[in-house]
Length: 108
Image (cartoon, rainbow, N blue to C red):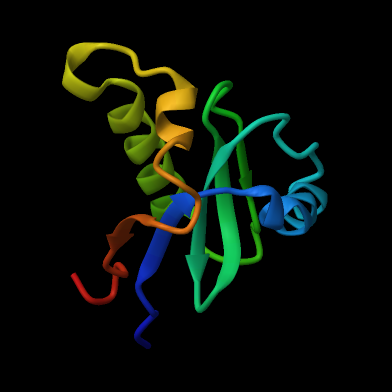
């Protein structure tokens, strides 16, 4: 069975409900600041907080690859050019722009 592509993007205030839903599914609390959100078919299935690295995921899905992709993308964003980037520099890019698109494991 083929899975749709995974989309990873920067969260915005419009994602508060989706982050709260993920936190409830993960028996955790939503991140205090910005996060990277992983979506399939427009539905959030995972997130990682930019500042703390805390991970939220809908464990009813196989999210191992999703969590790995989120952590890898967070690491790359924070280590741009070998220097730790400030979160405010990441936020300046805007929430609507897709950060990356990762093909599904089935497509690889």
